Length: 151
Image (cartoon, rainbow, N blue to C red; front, side, top):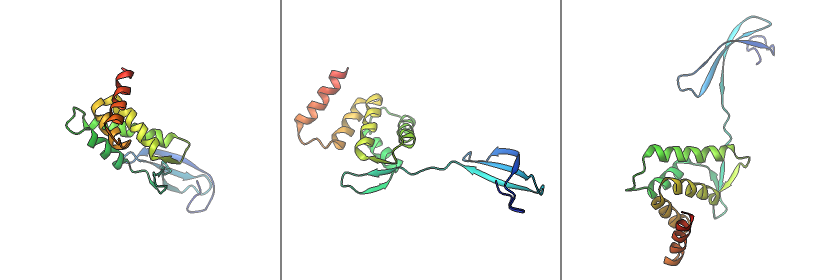
């Protein structure tokens, strides 16, 4: 870390502590050359995940869109908000940990359906019916048959 007073390249950390929000680490440093002290903040660099939509357009991943879609499929079901939050957090973590910076909506939809299948099967079928755009009762029944055969 370069000293703001003398521009020397080396300093030592005297004190480290998280900020109130826990999102940053505050460090008190002392320049090895001039001995003056200064404060730095360390934050996690987040690289945005870009979503490739079905029409080919791109937009930054929005966890609220995913949460709202999953929430809608869980309406009037015994699924807590905390359970849904945990599922969305897990999906977002998978996307962030992926080496791919661009993810298709198909991939995100599959991850959401996998989570909903574990949480509530009715919510899963609701989400799948909108996501996969079932054209008629036969495609809907095929999805139900797949779900039943997995049990």
